[in-house]
Length: 132
Image (tube, rainbow, N blue to C red; front, side):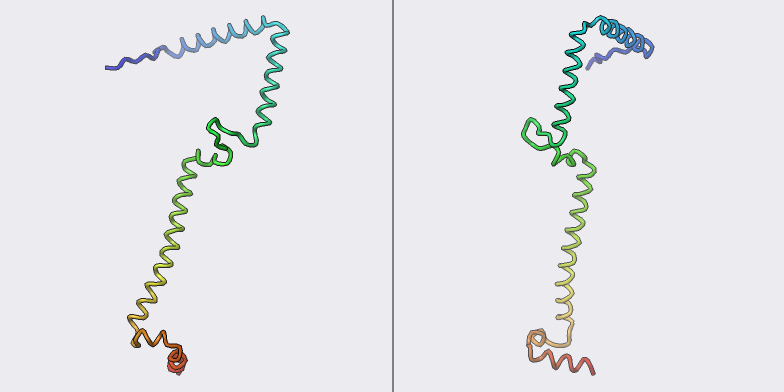
């Protein structure tokens, strides 16, 4: 049987504790020296500058460029792209299949033998008879 280690306190107690912690942080922040405040301000400025410089392309720790493949993180977009690619591929394959199927059915259903369609000399006479 597993035990639940979460602290089940009511929201009023949690809010009171949060206000107490915020009050302690505010009290300690008022007591910081000017030197510490200046160091914190300089550190923040360096962090903002570094973030702005790296905003174009970021390289992850494994060496991949996250900006180029950021769309992969959007699973719905990737899934829609895969479905669209599958639909287009199946449409193209169906068109190719239907073309060969139609020509085979035409040859098999024609009154003339298949050799007549291959014979170049027979084609003009075939066209003359159909125009009459």
